[in-house]
Amino acid sequence: MNELELKYGCNPNQKPSRIFMANGADLPIEVLNGRPGYINFMDAFNGWQLVKELKAATGCPAATSFKHVSPAGAAIGLPLTETLAKIYWVDDLGELSPLACAYARARGADRMSSYGDFIALSDVCDVPTAKIIQREVSDGVIAPGYEPEALEILKSKRKGTYNIIKIDPDYVPEPIERKQVYGITFEQGRNELVINDELFANIPTEAKDLPDSAKHDLAIALITLKYTQSNSVAYACGGQAIGIGAGQQSRIHCTRLAGTKADNWYLRQSPKVMELQFVDNIRRADRDNTIDLYIGEDYMDVLAEGEWQKFFKVKPEVFTREEKRAWLDTMKGVSLGSDAFFPFGDNIERAHRSGVQYIAQPGGSIRDDNVIEVCNKYGITMAFTGIRLFHH
Image 1 (cartoon, helix red, strand yellow):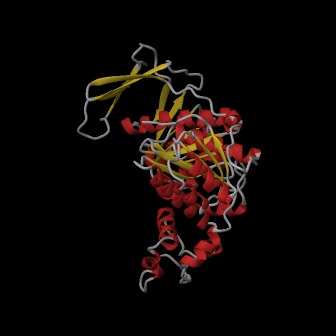
Image 2 (cartoon, helix red, strand yellow):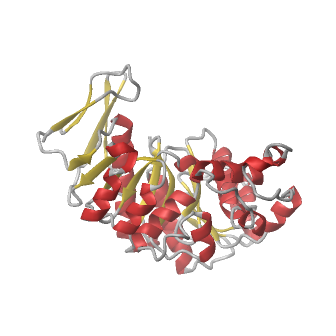
Image 3 (cartoon, helix red, strand yellow):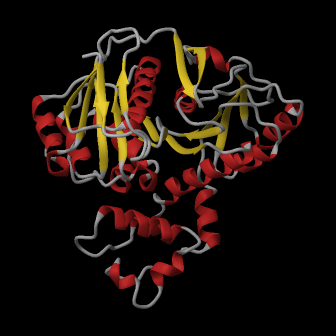
């Protein structure tokens, strides 16, 4: 099949719409269920590239949760701690496969943004992964294959309309890519840059320590950024992205946005949040939204009289700003990647507040000395990769 007609483009008024192979070859995908749309396919193909690269770079199964052509989360399949299993709402599912752990991590990094995501999996979707996907609000999934039972589980979602795409894992795109803007065709070579440990060899900071675990996390951050709308910054820890700031016009806003998301990820693991007693049968999305309010500046909204009973069995204590800061001060070992150089040291100041100890960025700013100085102030190890990762 050379082309596939779509219901419409980005918006319902944008018709006709299709995906097709300009060279006459067959499409490298098969729609096994549902009717994916224009944005679904954009998320699917970007997500597939991301997880394929993560698998190649780390040797571990990988997953990503995509929304509007940027990842909300990305991860490899490392085992979950008891705490992570609980905050990702998978502690009741028993033993999880590496692929299921990867998706639980990718979804759990920013559960609010992942609501209604498109999922990409590096490996054949197994039953444990399908069971996680089954109970989450999601638009669809792309993978190189599906176990028969896993496929049946997924087909039952959304009253049988869940979008399921199978992609040929051996498909290799043409080396030149094209797109049109305002009727004008743009052409460029595909970004085939391989991200590996060699990128982290140039370390201009006083701190030189860069353990293998940090190299893993920095690779995850940079590969994630390779498929994130620029400007973008990603925080990573323990085999997963924990905060992604996408599509901002200034670097500091990327760093702040991603840092806030990383902070929320860590605050969800605090004793005050872990001990929250939710009412029975609360919807997963309501539980996530309530936690976000509780750890944010709007916490009084969910603690007000007449409101807290909707969510909690017992009225929780206020989570004060001082208590949150004290908990965040225990956050350590975080890695940070940036798709372009840091122009000012304020980015490092903000990153330090979220436990960043390792940084990979291109370098090349006229203020590199200032950025290095702030890293030295906090004992942060920073590598100059010499490569930019803009994605538009």
